[in-house]
View 1 (cartoon, one colour):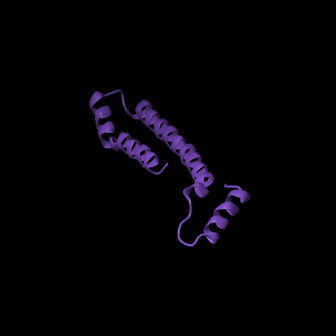
View 2 (tube, one colour):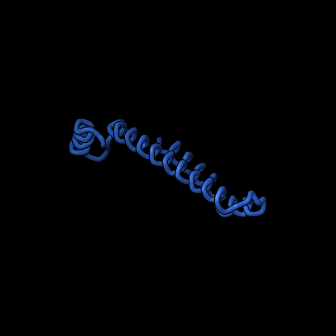
View 3 (cartoon, helix red, strand yellow):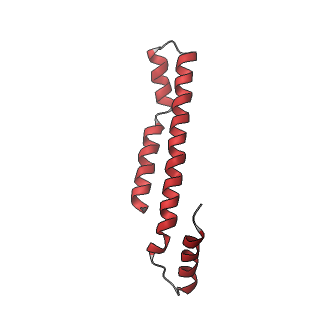
Length: 92
């Protein structure tokens, strides 16, 4: 959670501005959000890999066609990761 001091900095910047707030007022919130997203994204990747490995070891006998089919269905994974990195680079 973002600290009370950082929250107050943002609040004061918003309250004292007439029409423009310098983006540096949001640096602490941006850093906190990036760290939080990164932590949860890594956990998602670990869980996804665990599910895949459990599936492979219990349901497949390393059938090449079945593996190809699995990757085809989940092919958006790499694209999603690529778009997520692009998103972070664009805003941060």
